[in-house]
Image (cartoon, rainbow, N blue to C red; front, side, top):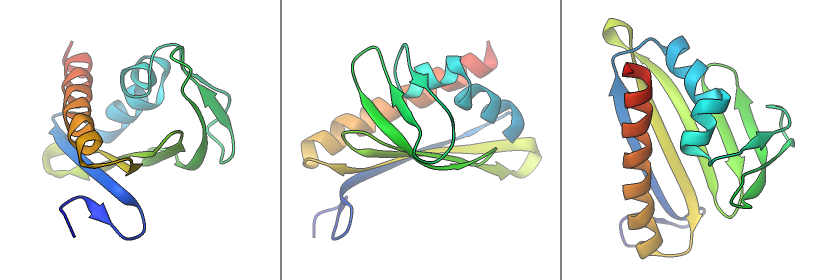
Length: 129
């Protein structure tokens, strides 16, 4: 089976970055309006973080919350499934991960790898600035 292709979730990709900020600081950004716009899309309207709640972006991407654990994880469906997780790291740092599954093919997987790396860079910049 090719790298990134799984039996159950189809094509998937995961990217992560260790950030020099505590988990609460990272969580406040990625789960708030400014951070949601960075990783989910501009104009995102998330009616509630509860499972089953709907969201929509200005680009017309819509889906629902499939999982939410305050301070740790948000899992959303849409055209694909995306999960963002935070893990505490030594020295008060945080590992921020994006995982996306159910993509169409290997090309989409590679496009999304580039996308998530850019998102991680934008989040790092927002936290540092």
